[in-house]
Length: 284
Image (tube, rainbow, N blue to C red; front, side, top):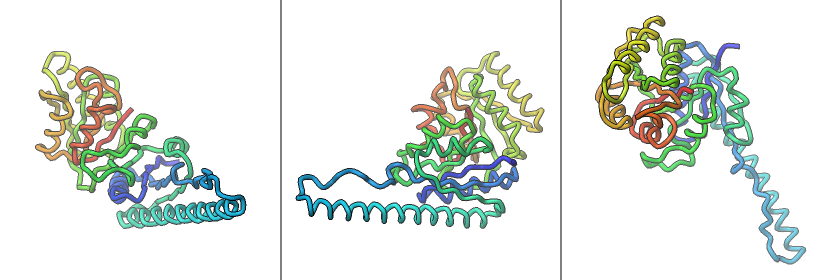
């Protein structure tokens, strides 16, 4: 089966962006897009006994009413989930994606993704979800959960899709950086983009050798990559470079070492995702 792109939609303001970014990746790879909406445990009927010390007859009537309310709520949540998937399907088809599949699942989001990701090339999720605060500094709780658990690259969609022509790869010389380079080199998603490999720290022979190796790996895949070393705190320096140089997307390894050890999972990554107004691909 051709690799697919899993797009997680929850009806939040980021759902359209998730669809648009998934459509962009699909157009460049020919992959199908599988929409996934999960009715989490918090969306399931509440079976708690709320009747207290009410008299037996009234208590029985109340429990029956509560059961009816729970049943109706469950039906409405399913209807809402299907409506979210229908809307997302229309967005993707409007973006030119011919092969769109919609799936409504119950249970834990991570478990649902794990069941579907075996033949996936990428997972797309919004920076913030329906339950997240709208404030610019509040990230959706599922972003880190998915990034930690998934074995596939995770694209964290920015608030709105913009045309992408320049790619920044964050490099620290570690295994995760090598995987990021390999991901870009092997994936048609990035074909034709202007690629820059950037490390934060002090220039040294070791650093330059590492960047030269990264450049050679990319050259073998047809990329004429640019490399550079910049100073400063990783999240601030990279975010500033993304803005100043108009990068359209960032690729980072899921786990690093040295000064950018926490670049992808942890407080540094959180700051990076918060401050960058472009999609970020996290690679394990």
